[in-house]
Image 1 (cartoon, rainbow, N blue to C red):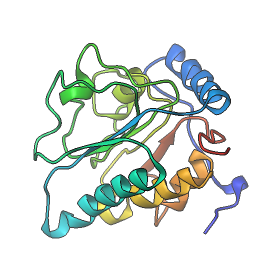
Image 2: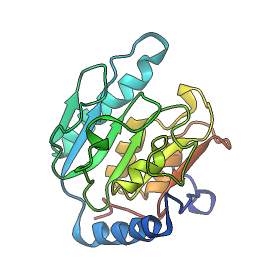
Image 3: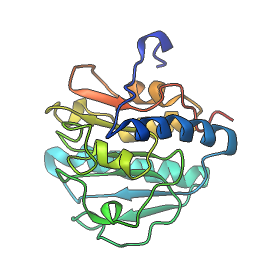
Length: 203
């Protein structure tokens, strides 16, 4: 299952130079000091052809619970409402709106150093150098060290499978190894942003 490290890539990009430097520094900090905190899973109550996305999120929550990471699951259809308290968030996975909104968009919200965050949407990474458009740039601006997204429609089955990613990450893989291991087909539509060698659970 492991993709050769020579073949996995990630982009060091984001809203601005300061954010990119902070992403690298935070990855190193978390490796040295541990990535400890809480996880957030934001369901959208989708079904039918979208059911597999909900299943990835539910299985991710189960994975967190098994290893002892406290997890909050929002079971409402809408994104978790603004100003909901989210202390020490280190892992965020949710869907399905076209731009950052809800609790993680609150002015006071900030991810813990080294956090990994992704909001699944067809065009979540269509704009990277903005702290207010789409999802990828704003999540990084809110303090995430790593995110993933799509620059154009890849269709759900070809996006990153959250459950596989989280399983690999917690097994000690680097974020790049975990991300591309969890992506069933490679194309120009998928992008990973962050230090590819970041290994938050290597120890």
